[in-house]
Length: 293
Ligand code: COA
Ligand code: MG
Image (cartoon, rainbow, N blue to C red):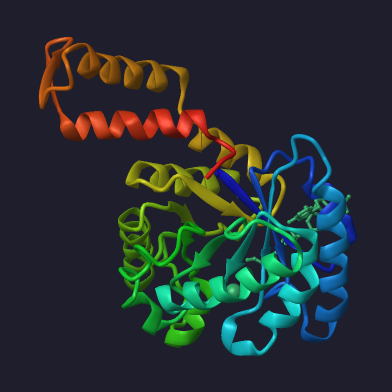
């Protein structure tokens, strides 16, 4: 999961375009990009799209961003889309691992109703949209085997905090938002799921997007969400390990294997120990499953 593209669930045109833009995951949105009175129609449009797109060979993974659990809209969203068997659900405004378990109970019922395998529907949560949720980023470990990723959001968090903005004059996230981002990274890694960086909303600024994606990659994120198809190739490129990186990781992996997996090996005059091996394994995992979880 390198690139995860949001597509408004009420836009047939954008849904159609999204299928061929190279995103690893589509996030068909029923939440913030759909007006309240457009939601019933968006649910039907999204379900029809999922049903048809699910048949395409080589399609991206299909997730639906439902409305938050406290809106009273979540069940209507799931009633509409679960019959089309999406690969996963994105849960916004998740407060803690308990929200994941709450959603799991709902998904299990829908899976049984539609003859889907129990646990087939994965979950990605947006885990930093309120101040309270930031204190619970350590609660996702063990929440559910359905959990595939954790991501963070700055816009709703900004609204909850009452902050005047979320970036400083030089364009970087200001302190509270950087903290939420970093804790999301720790929470995801602690839960052994994919840490996914948030959207870059200025969709004409490709240099800015690339810089932010590179910083995320450097820190340990394995993918980034997008809001516009033009952002997808940039994100895919940044989060795809280069042939050199893969070759180096493979050499490290093989050096440990050849030596009988000791604590430490020497390679090209450099001392390598277990953290180097774990890093190499993570690069090989990313190289092997760019579209997977
Ligand atoms: N998915 C699929 N197609 C998209 C798209 C998306 N997210 N965003 C734009 N497109 C399509 C447009 O329909 C357009 O195609 P067309 O000319 O054949 O109609 C083409 O890409 C170029 O779009 P462009 O004119 O550059 O942008 P726009 O003004 O039409 O749209 C946004 C700008 C921001 C409204 C749009 O990108 C969007 O809806 N993004 C997703 C927003 C969202 O889901 N937000 C919630 C999460 S934060
Ligand atoms: Mg939002």
